Image (cartoon, rainbow, N blue to C red; front, side, top):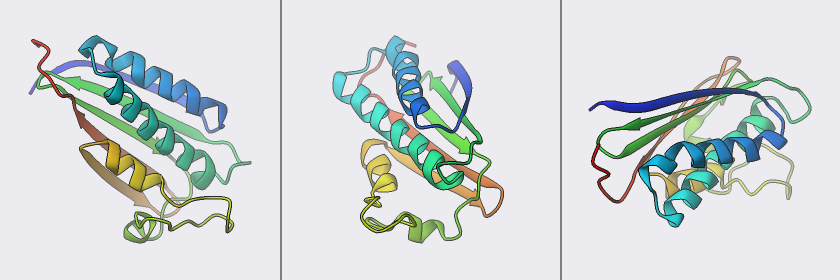
Length: 147
């Protein structure tokens, strides 16, 4: 499998950068001529991953680094990763359960990982408490693009 293109974007962990990350991800995959549904799914999954980093990794008020990486592969797959250097996740399996949240009751739905998983073909979460989290997502676009 051959890489067609790759990008890396470093940004500060602020909620305004969720829109930037969504736009960058959508623009990056545009050369593969995805459907509107695929673009919406990618934008939503990226937004959830960046939002998790802003809210949970750094606590909302504390700022830190979020790294978005993306790669287009010759077989039609797109790989995204969103990484932070924040507090990490103590129990990944528990965090991936629908409706689980560490935020204040009523403020968070606890559906971030569930949303990411439902819109992407593969989701992997790696985290070390005190060192950060890396979410890797794979999306296989519906058609062949002649790469």
